[in-house]
Image (cartoon, rainbow, N blue to C red; front, side, top):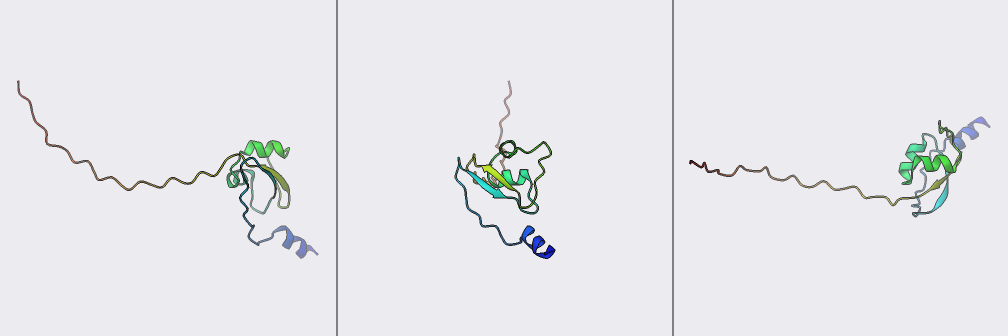
Length: 99
């Protein structure tokens, strides 16, 4: 019985990823290793919104199996591609002026 409980509690199967749309609120089941900050980053929302929607205290303790309401507020911004390096600037020939 204990092994079945632990197997269900710490399910190692990959979680299917369904991209929620901006403005949606959905139910998320907390998994082992999750924290409120990581969840907010994963779903492009803010920690304080998750905290307020789920009546979490300042410690924001969450547990595997707990269900949280998650508001999706922002679209995911694609990462910026680095620019190719620019060639170094070569000094130009200078002229001295005599007066």
